[in-house]
Length: 203
Image (cartoon, rainbow, N blue to C red; front, side, top):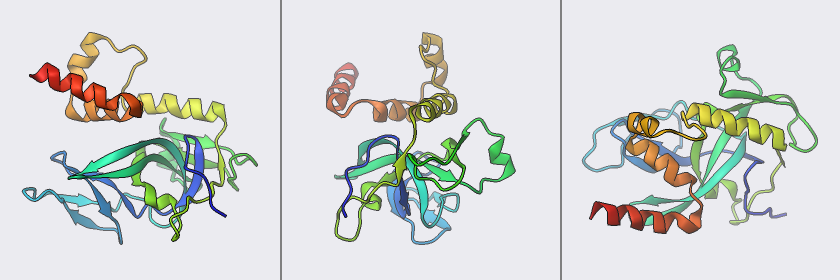
């Protein structure tokens, strides 16, 4: 039975074999992760090596958070930003404010208490959420609203985003990475106009 296009707060068992990684010089590409280890940056002029061993391997539950179109060279790839869930987190992670415990319920489909590892949020190719026939996978469940709101607050903490940032905050934290994070959070229907406005300001 085919599922529906994933939505925020839905949980899926997936293997994130194809996802976005960034080298230390800021080059971001989609990579196929066939096995853990080191990967050469796809940017032709870059000699950086990316360590992909931190990425979870095999099937794990993931919470859908946002969706976007990733521009890789001249192609647009549909992606989802996801947060991994694990029931076997180490003691060090349990003490982190970005490791949020979620109890198992019939609604979320988990079989035991799990931790949402917010500090390991990543961008995954949408094809990881499809079967061999190209149909969407069936979700196992979805998190409750209180859990969603708690994770949202921890994401703000992780990315150092305040509810109403001051001008000084932007001056002290301005970076290409922050600009990209803010842009990715914009609704899809206003991204184009936002880009055009930025280009007009440069000219």
